[in-house]
Length: 256
Length: 256
Image 1 (cartoon, each protein chain N blue to C red):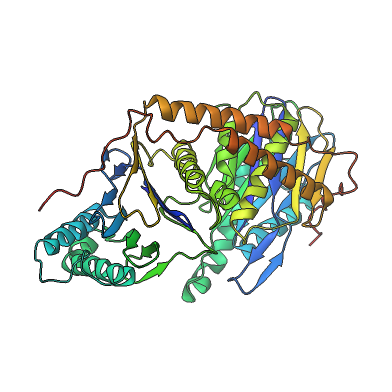
Image 2: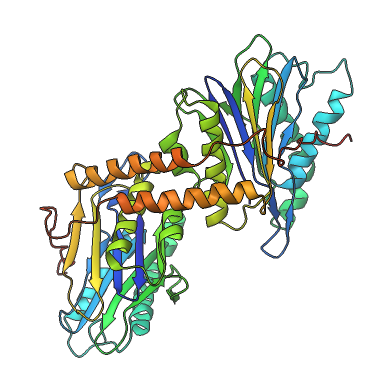
């Protein structure tokens, strides 16, 4: 499994990913899932991948290959983020067409989902999700984050903290805690955690973190969050079983 | 969708459920999912249901019907909770056998999952999960809670708060916040919330709550939890992008 997320606010972007890959529970390994394919000073391009690793690696290799052919359309020359998203979707479709029938014979899925975030000079920052079928959607001020992989455990904290007006450092902290919560509840999501913060209009990646399981910083943040959560929990008033007028009998099931 | 959970600690049991049912997103209604089928003074039997409503209602009607035939094996006469769990599993199988081929014709699932909690006089409290296939597992001190339906959003808080030694009122509060978190992230889980707290060896249900969406008590708890969570979040130190030695370059993808 995987957990990646992208956050877009009016101040820029956060992209984050775990690094655990598994083929069954008995083959667990570590792969990078967050990639920086920027052209510094001109365009920032960050990609997070989830799903079938052979498909997403194949897509990234084809992207790299096209970058070496200057006259070709590639992620450094395509005019908009929508074009780049469609281009990545096209690569996914190509690999899947090559492999689908062979994988299907053994009941293996060739699905994947990709997040694409960044900014092209003269345009605003953008965040896209590219589906396994090659189509795509973009994030909006109303929905300022996108998640792929094991998305549910880490969503409540994002729902409570994030808006399009959230400062970038707050968004980055929520991303880290969202991934940490997911790691706690699902062992198929695991460290190291990659995190990138991109400041709008800077056209370079200045803020990056890679935190492994023994990182003192990750351990500190986690301990602090656990303690604070427990304190928050303690401050919620106890259930008022007797004082409340809400107490009603739960009916027995009606007689048949 | 549905979210129900059962918690067992050394002090007793908590059973809780939402009440939203949907057939697609355009047909949403409210059904009770937590049922009290106790024989006061002798045995406490609480059942939560998720999945295909026609299957779970059918199961409960058959259970009620058997209770009206005194010489028959029924949930008030079966000797152990394991027997009751297997009995419920058998009812599920019966209904599914009647309906499966007809539902399958139209691509409709006849799956369901059931939680069974309570206590028989002379035995300890027990908590079982009965799978759609009719088999079952029971909770243990190492895994003191069981969830059915939309389980993921509400699991992180349980992972952090619950153990077999947790006092019942704390367990009840964690159950309520777990359901509330789930309702916030998934609209297919909704009020009213039913909550029952059973004190070990009391053999009667003394503590019940039914909280609808406008319940002042639920609104108060929710507001307090949101505020406390935000304060907890604020207390977590900001990311140390520069001070940390963990900062490393995220490699570009290797050249093909």
